Length: 359
Image (cartoon, rainbow, N blue to C red; front, side, top):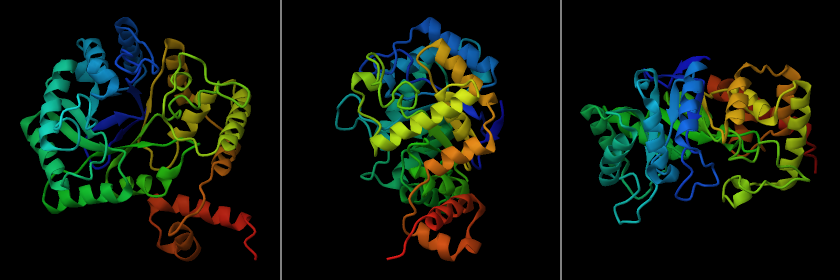
């Protein structure tokens, strides 16, 4: 397992992190899994034994029960772990519940620490952008939590490029600590993060951590043109996410991934994780699993080496449509591109050259 400093911070985390959304599986998260304490304990031990030192949770997951399960699994291993949690999604329904406000963040951190049975978090995320709240309030309260020793670093999740930049800019211009990480949805089926978010994180010194790399169960290799999602799974239980833009494209992608997997005696999830792991500007990929077999497979994907042809096949098939201003910059100002964005602009040029644009 490899490790990387997260953005410009001093937080060293593993390239794979363990997500805990399957832990507990209560309070509306039954579709994610129904994982008991004994299995969760094994997950944590197995991850640590394989070099994974970063563990990701949220007060949203099973409405706090996932944090409780993770907390019970810590034992005497807390010193070997870096733990992240999130706040911001409304859970209880009160007028001051949820959001990126001081009152919500200060109240939920204490509840999270109590559920986890720890005195501090290594990383605390704002789970969603809250456009109603001044950025100054969110940045200041996170800095206050750092000063109090309740968190070591802070981050954001599911932000747009401009809201990420606005948050970072306010912090640095006011001599405050900016977010160390941005948690992003990014899969072969959904590569929109390449337009702005991934290069922005690198340029701003904000680490890019990837959530649900298997598309919330869509890319498990078992959902195909001829096979619907199995009952009892997330997608088989009416899980609302993700937004699937084009079913035919999705089915073709799965078939291609199955072909590549068969060449390596691997699984579709392993191929997806191996491709994502080595994508530009990706710092850590958060893996999760419903059972031990899936966990072992996902962790084992770290040693899977795809061929250059495999990588090109996936990358070319799932290439993003060049949109403005990216097509304009790719056409005219490639020499002005920073290193973090150059690979994407090169891909846009490749796509444009392959298309007949004569009218």
